[in-house]
Image (cartoon, rainbow, N blue to C red):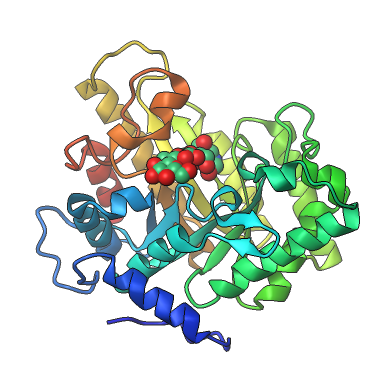
Length: 360
Ligand code: G3I
């Protein structure tokens, strides 16, 4: 059954509905998460009081084995790249909606939430924007139009957007000197949040980054930005902590400190890209029982910490991938690793059961 989120009064174009119907037809064999959970192991979405998400690609949505696990276990989707500017933004006012539409259609079909990742990211910026030839005012107008058009299209199907991703420099805690910073000025992040809010009064607006746990300077800069936003009435609803971590690093106290800083500001916490490396030292060529147990314990700490957040601020925990063999980390780190909840055969690992145990 197709359920459109009509809680938001918004004009739903017939074109959009037609595209959605087509995308549905191209999608899965149907069946939502509401069916009796008769699977071989308990589903996280049915045990958890907060949304549990997974980052997927449309390639994976085309594989029945992935579909079955994704829709039974999770109730939130993030696109690994399909909802990013480099995929959607083809030119001024020109868009490639196809991949993102497939994700939102699959989510609707299976009663899942969609987390929009991301509207502005220097690492996913199309060349015509990166090398923009017009004036700064024209650049600003182009970004505003992009944010407006994307947020408007997905007003019925996307719950929240990472409005800006990874804006802070790792070293000096300042904004990275990106084309957005250069062309729109030092207040560009605030502008993007305002543009998104103008496009949809109800969508949740997140700032998303990595390293704010182990990089105090980056965390301090992020919190200073948030405090400034809140003082100026710039809309922001939550913070995404990517959490690309290891089984033995960073210290849980460091994670707790940043989570506390977000909660103190009354903002929602999204653990937005969780993966837990078990081979950070490149010491193993296959998962060992010890490292898998350590990964399970780390997962349990994280879930137990997350459940201590006030429920209204628990936006959810999203794993950055389904199966170990698909993790971005393998190419990025150039070494084997097994950072996720499911193995190469889509079988749940000890960390999956640790997640479940921590929900009791
Ligand atoms: O497989 C598709 C192919 O079918 C398609 O035609 C083609 C179109 O460009 O893309 C192919 O997919 C690639 C995708 O990875 C496969 O998962 C994309 O080219 C490639 O750009 C994409 O890289 C993603 C990367 O961000 C850049 O967008 C990674 O999947 C994704 O894991 C990674 O995620 C980032 C977060 O967004 C931000 N935080 C860090 C994280 C890791 O870098």
